[in-house]
Amino acid sequence: MEIGIAVGDVRGPATLEELVGQVRTAADAGFGMVWSSQAFGWDALTALAVVGGRVPGIGLGSAVVPIPQRHPLVLASQALSVQAAVGDRLTLGIGAGIAMMVRGMFGLAADRPARRMREYLSVLGPLLRGESVTYQGETLTAVGAVNVPGAKNPQVLVAALGPSMLRLAGELADGTVTWMTGPRTLAEHIVPSITKAAESAGRPAPRVAAGLVVCVTAGEVAVRERIAEEFALAGQVPEYRAVLDREGAAGPQDVVIVGDEDAVARQLGRLADAGVTEFIASPYGSAEEQGRTIAVLADLAASGAWTEMASPVDQMREGTQTG
Image (cartoon, rainbow, N blue to C red; front, top):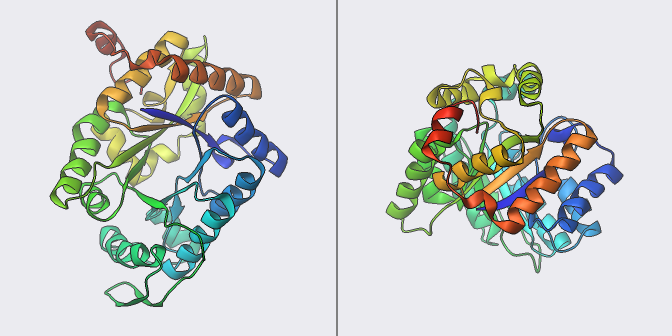
């Protein structure tokens, strides 16, 4: 399991220089990948193009870009432009978007998300490969092509939590990105579902990138209480509520990775044992807390200490209160 670092809005508002600093810190610490989410500030792909030009070498991923407000011709053009700008270091993570936001903020249809995603991927894949499309589906029409000379088509990961979305992610994409999803759900639902779909479609083993908030701290109880308050609304969103219920978690505070160095290592081990191929760590808290968390994660990644499986006693003690 590789460890990458989330940068940008998910960690709090950041200026351009702060964003570049987060990426440079991750690169200097030895991490191979940073991930930018699409929230209410920085455009994720624009941000990756800018920071990629300032910080060479490190991989760049979007986790994730919602598709309802982006026609595949537009997204393909943007993604390939980023690829050309950063030397083909992009992994394109996309998602159907949170239904209440798609409807409430943009006034767009949010019904049949799996159907919409299937049609979208059917168009996006050929466009990223430089092919021309003429497509008329139930939810999407697309006619045209995108030509960005020298840019390779990026791998595409799909945010998938439910059975239908996991099936199509396995069939039509290179893997999945999850958020707020604990180790039990990853092991028993996410990984086997997408792996089976990929095998049935004759595709390579899928990437499974799992994103969670992380904080290395001696004050675990207090930090979990802060997270419970700050992420309370997210825990009520139907899409996330479904995987929290599957995990047996009362809220986001029960699936985040919080504790001292040993506790964090055990929790990372549970993710690796679940079949996660890439962990997207979202450092939480003050600048000091985030700095300590990144340093510990870098040490764990370098030493491989987190690969040790948690003991049965640890698993029983932690139950569903850690991720």
